[in-house]
Image (tube, rainbow, N blue to C red; front, side, top):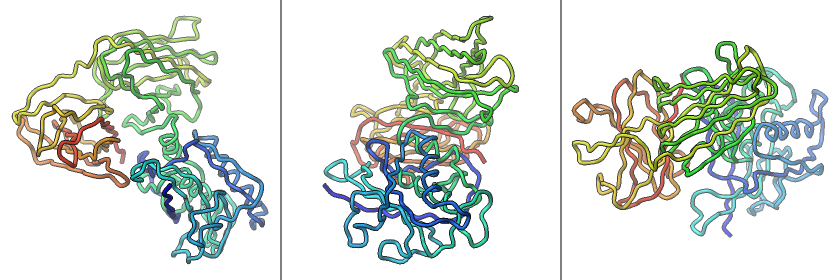
Length: 467
């Protein structure tokens, strides 16, 4: 089986921004990795390097769906590396004055070496990670401490956190506050962006920001396709959560692919639950008249909503009747298809191509052999409205098609306006991404392919980029 080896580096500075983690498209098949930890020596602060590295491993394990395990014996991170081989099957960690036979680059604090195993004969797309080794630059002045970075002293634990992020499959993230930023800084702990990135790869709840200053949680299952879908998951209202009217709140985004009859139940033994349901557009505007709520019956420990809904994306809000209440809860959503398909309006444009009016943040579709064509390629077009200036990130992904994403504004007579955006490939794959600031108006979003006559399933995810 073909194996490839990659190097990943860490350096220095962080900025504030949206949740925008970057996954490498490579992952451990069982969502776990073992490091042989036996780093000799003690930091100037008096703590062992081993203790700090294990604490960094535990931070990822506790916060995400990925598990790091430690073996209390040394493992040479360069074993099998500086001879041209691809590792020795053991995840090692330690200090060295070179990166397994070559010099460290300028300002490089550490490297992570990952050995990859191809998952298909062509060695394309996702690859399995089968070994990871971490080498810390012994030429640096190291210590273990919390708080702001000290002059001319690299802090070991935050660099370990960063390198372990690479080891589990994350790349650098330059647009968000994250331990995975390419430069070391005063941030010394995992950030929401880091946690969401790991959970995106390995399943679990991830979060995205909203214009209402309330993070939106995206469970591992966010889409209901029927005929009868049920999800159950537990959560906790905590003092670290966002608040609304002096009450802590968790908000989950779910997408219903068909017009449905839904039943939502929220229960807790530690607070009186209050349940909220609201439809939302791709620009994070609540659809007028779409909000429903239930604050439970007097003396009851549950809140419930049962109603028909149109296909689309919805926010389910979990909060309490009383201010500042905290505690664990259980949420159940049951969706039964009311009618196959959706009630989205479709019209034929002046260009002879059908357009679906679909404002959802998540759209699942497929290029089919009977679709209409643009430039000799099958295409689907969706219309959405922008009511106030907003920066959107639109991502078109597919495991079947080399995608091309188009965004254009249209005038009242369906003539194309001045905005025309096109993206073929994103940073890491054949998926496509457009990030742009859009003024109020009507827009068409086109999903098509790079090569003629390609067809297959795809997904469009739209999120708001906060300043």
